[in-house]
Length: 110
Image 1 (cartoon, rainbow, N blue to C red):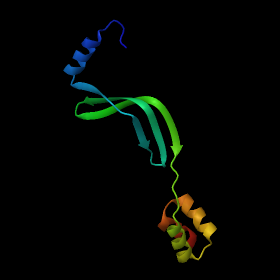
Image 2: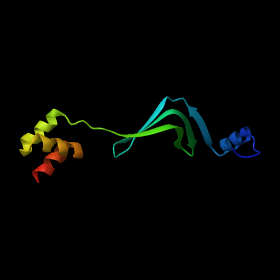
Image 3: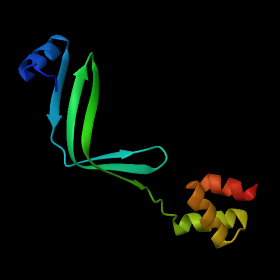
């Protein structure tokens, strides 16, 4: 990592600066993003780093990303149809896009 510096010396310097790190044994790390995308990290190497009262994580491994599919329930479809008078096709389409019952009803009603 640092040419010519002993790893034990680095650990000592980090300790003096109030920095500690610990390896965490993990099988999988999952991150759910706000847009619904899921990032999965298989066979991860996870390091917890504590510095000045803050905790952060360094993660590496086999990364994959996928969109989270949200299922539209038959009850939600019926509710949208009843409240708006729209077709089943339209109710499914809008619910699939908005992923929210109230928002779908408002969108179709306006």
